[in-house]
Amino acid sequence: MSSMSAEEEDEARERRLAEIEFVRSAYGEDEAWVVDEKLTIYRRLLVSSSDGNVIDVLLSLTMPDGYPIDEEAILVIDARISDDAVGASSSSCTAKNMRKMVMDSLPSLIEACRLSALEYVGSESIF
Image (cartoon, rainbow, N blue to C red; front, side, top):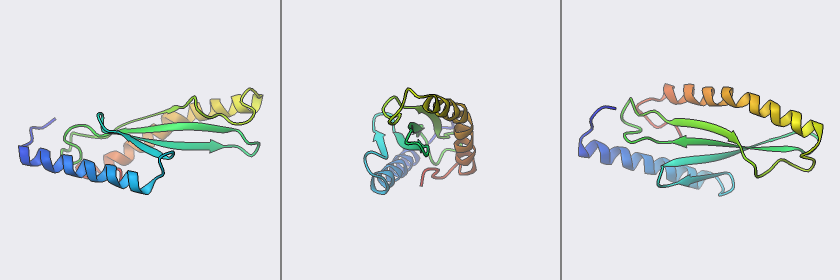
């Protein structure tokens, strides 16, 4: 990571906080939330089927020091299935198959988000 002046660090911090405020105002608390000490934004994605099964996916976007002005400070992106919600018949074969399909899709979701973040390197990726 490149060395930044105190002024650049302040600018980066202010811009990160602006993105956090955007997320807090754009989404409800059950849709997206921020863990301040890590500067990580969690976004809940619900994947549902026609038979009422729901898989709860948590997408996490962590803003490293220097983000967004340091071109080497790229969002750290991850996704996982939450244990919170799996719908009405979570033990059914359909629910298990759906969970497997979502699990198999997570690497593609993460890669698509990473590619998107790379397109905006040096500027805000979350807005």
